[in-house]
Image (cartoon, rainbow, N blue to C red; front, side, top):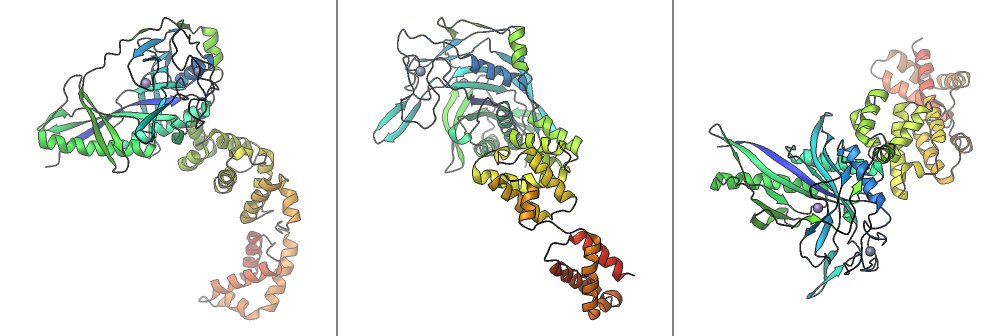
Amino acid sequence: MDLQYKIIVGLEIHVHLATRTKIFCGCELAYGDTANTHTCPVCLGMPGSLPVMNKKALEYSILTGLALNCKIAPFTKWDRKSYYYPDLPKNYQISQYDLPFSEHGYIEIPLADGTTKKIRITRAHLEEDAGKNTHTLGNFSAIDLNRAGTPLLEIVTEPDMNSAEEVGALARELQRIVRYLGVSEADMQKGHMRFEPNINLHITRDGQIFKTPISEVKNLNSFRAVERSIAYEARRQYQEFVETGKTMQMGNKATYGWDDDNQMTVLQREKEEAHDYRYFPDPDLVPVKVDADWLGEIKSRLCELPSQMQQRFVSEYGLSNYDAGVLTADRATAGFFDKTVKLGATVKRVCNLLTQTGLKLAKEKGVPVDQLNITDEALADLAKMADVGDVSASAATTIFEMMAESGENPKKIAEEKNLIQKSDSGEIETLIDQVIAENPKAVEDAKNNPKKAKKSAGFLMGQVMQKSKGQANPKVVSQILNKKLNA
Ligand code: ZN
Ligand code: MN
């Protein structure tokens, strides 16, 4: 018998903030540098060294909290979370316990059908990252503390997601938001974003709802792993319930890892009790007061958020939700598109030029699309030339590529490369009359032979294009030619 069930997922996300230096010392943040070259007494946990808060890290966090519709606390403090681990030299992590800088927000996630869903944010707090254990030295483990002290924004959601797709959508939306805000590079490959879903099922049997034990999957660093681990856990928990009838016990939670090679979760610790981290306020750090002036100053740095921009592109410009999604995937593309369209070029043309040619070129060159050596004015000029038929759509693509090479304006390139289309009807009519005179059989078929009419008209059209060396505007040619054939 198949039982009805609902997947329940809450998410904990850690995001590396893109500050220049670490959160409590002046060491530079460096990814992939020689181990232990970005350390000092503070991040090495030397006795007697004193931490100082990086103001920018808190501002980046507050900015993100505002974008996530959170209430920002006027008073926030730092706590020590005690645990012992080789990559944590102080034996405690500086974090925020009972007074996080923000709480009670929400994020709106885009769903495949074009609608959105509100997911509540429980809290967001700021903490420091630990170092890294590496296991590349044979029988030895090594510690790299370059990462220790990296500012880490922890965001916790309510269990409001009901499918792997929804969790994936939230993860991607959050990535888009922190990148728009410029607070994180959010590069998954560099471990800038890590996800920990809490997953269980509500299964209906005999009119009663049974809740399966919660699994927490630790440290996922790709969207795919997030989605697959949830789908896998749903199947595993369902199977386990059918076989054992096991349900959730208060306070118990099993932790799992994700085995990417075998595409399955692996049990790490079962029936874990709530940890006692011996939280207490860090006596070395002063609490932080966020007054109205400071908060207002941070608020003024908020930009239009990606989902709002996507919705605006649909309502204001009439784009499909899909196209609007492609254009708002990053802020550079969205802004560039917006500016170009406001200069009077048609929406669909600019959208096509950017998504089909611009993004490809940008990817090849490894730069954002607005750094291709092409200004919004130049792109608008090119789009307008294509709009009025001065150049064909395929010539516009070629010109776009040449603009990125030379930085020249589109008109000059089109003239130099002979890409201007002839739309002058007098000139085109002369060509058409010549072709008609030279091909009486085809003209006869096009006019009076229903079986061959279409093919013959196409042939005549081709002859005209050839005579013009491909420079006649095909739209104008076909208009005049049809008129003459139907006369
Ligand atoms: Zn340091
Ligand atoms: Mn954390």
